[in-house]
Length: 368
Picture 1: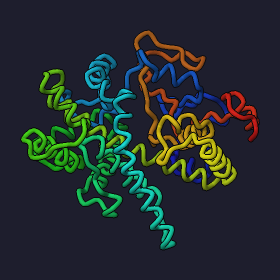
Picture 2 (picture 1 turned 90 degrees about the horizontal axis):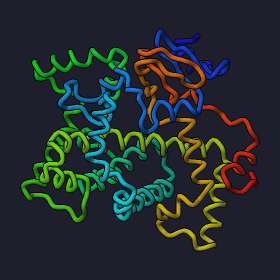
Picture 3 (picture 1 turned 120 degrees about the horizontal axis):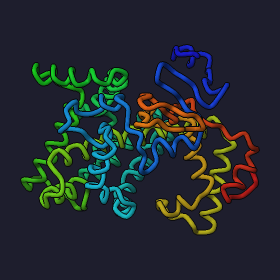
Picture 4 (picture 1 turned 180 degrees about the horizontal axis):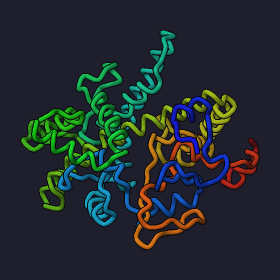
C-alpha cells in the first residue's frame, strides 16, 4: 500500500490498479465500485458521516449545518425544513438572474480575447460562480468578475476554512477543543468574513434597508423563520452553505470541464458540432436555457466525465459502517470501520469499452 500523497502525485500512481478495494490506513478504505456509491450515499442510507466532516462547520451541536451534521436522522430533519428552496422549480425561477451573470462572463471573455491577455481559468470561474450564487442567494452579485478582485475577503476566508477542515478533519474531535479555545480567547476564524456578510444582509433585509426584486434564498428563509418553521441558525447555515460550498464546488467543476476539453480537442470539436446542429434546428436559445442544455447528450456526457475525472471535493467523503456491519462492493465490513469512500479523485472506475459502445448505451449517436 502506498500512503505518501506526494509519491502518488509524482508518479501518477493509481491505488486501485490491483483491485476495487484499497486499504488506505487502519479502518480506512477506498472503494472503486459503482454500487458502493449508492450504498454509502444513497437516499435512506444508514452509513453516517465520519468525524472528518465535523471540522467543516460549527464545533458545537446547536450550530451544525447540512454538511457537517453527522447524524442521519438529524440531517434528514434539517434537510426537510429547507428542501423546498432547492426544488428544481425553485431553482429554475432564478434562471433569468443567472443569465445576467452569463452575459457578464461572455463580455469578460470577449475582452480577454480582444486584448489577447492571459486568463486564469479557475479564478475567473470562481468569480463567476460567486456572482451567480450572490444573485440567487441575496438578490445581487458580489461583482467579483467586474471588479477583478474580492473586496470582501470572502474567497480567502473560504480557502483558509477549507485548509483548516482538511487538516483538522483527520482528527475530527480536535475541532471541538479548538472551538472552545476560539470562543474563550475570542479569536477570529476564517469564516468570520462570510458570517459578517451574511449577518449584514439579514439585518438590512429585516429592517427594510435592503429590498429584492425577486424571491431569493434570503427572502424565502426569512419567510420560513417568520412562520416559525426554521430557526435563526438555519437561516445563517443555509446562506453560508450556498456561499461557501456551492460556489467553490461549481468553480472547480467548471474549470475541470474547460481543462479536459482543452486536453481533448476532438471532444471540443464534437461538442461544438452538437451545438451547431442544435442552432440550425432552432433548438437553442440565446442564452441557452437549462431545459435545452439537458437535452444535449454529448454536452451532458462531457460534464459528467469531467466531474468523474476531477471531483469537486479533494478529500474522500467517508462514511462509518453502522451497527451490525454491512456488505459493500461484495465485501463485509464490521461495524465501526470509520472510513469508507468511493468518491476519491483516484476512484474513477474507467469504462474500458470503445467510445462508440459507451454512447450507444446512453441512447445517443454511435458515431464517436
